[in-house]
Image (cartoon, rainbow, N blue to C red; front, side, top):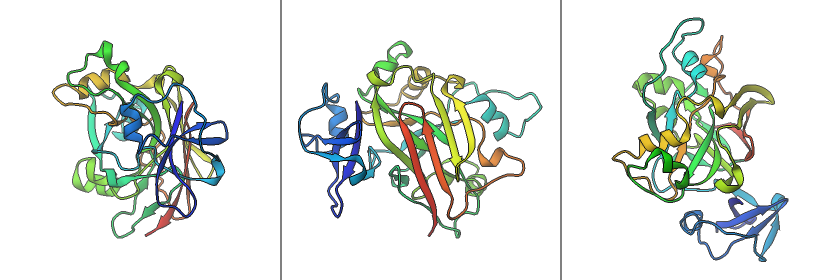
Amino acid sequence: MRYLTFSLPNERTQRVGVLDRDRVVELPEFPNMLALIAAGGIRAIPYGPAYASGDIRWHAPIPRPGKNVFCLGRNYAEHVREATGARGQEFKLPAHPIFFTKTPTSVIGPYDDIVWDRRVTQQVDWEAELAVIIGAGGKNIRRDAAMSHIFGYTVINDVTARDVQNAHHQFFKGKSLDTFCPMGPVIVSADEYGDPHRKAVKCRVNSVEKQNGTTADMIFPIDQTIESLSRGCTLETGDIISTGTPEGVGMGRTPQEWLQVGDMLETEVEGIGILKNKVVSA
């Protein structure tokens, strides 16, 4: 199934639905996406109110996460190389997953604007990522059981203010600015998605390809990530884990590249869909 959160034109009420080709079938029995995830989703597309996918407003599948979005830093070898400036040299891979978080207030929908406040940052960067949605929560989850705790998958761009990140010597602040976490357009259920470690991850700026990687190159695959993150730390239904980005970010380019006002950022993960977010001035 392909689940989404949406609203109708000129309406503030958010609804939950399932995407069936080019139409959205509403699931009125679920007040929000977290309730649907807690119920384990649906088994078949029901008869019910339906709308053309082009006639709705798309929101992030989980518009306001219950807690911060968990993220992995430097989870692709070539991204480690470019992030550490080690091109053409030997470099050391992390021995353990590098975790940080993004605030719920950073989350926006798949077609919403990224708002650039020049008073805060001058270096806005892109990071295309596959994200995991936890279904059944747990603590100290074993690696061999980890994949059974996944409800589904979505797309995130871990937009980052690099100058803020560098000034504070950590990831959190520069990655948590408002609108810096585009998400969507749908959550694809785990049973439909198949192997998450064989998916293309791409990013384009103004139709120019910047990233083209594969989840097969993750240093820490998803089951190992869940095992590590849940060790002594309870994961809950609806928690989001963004699994890191492949090489090709603006920071690692020569010369470095940053997003500008008017740019269209496209983020694509195979089998899920494409985010299209325009950069606008605050």
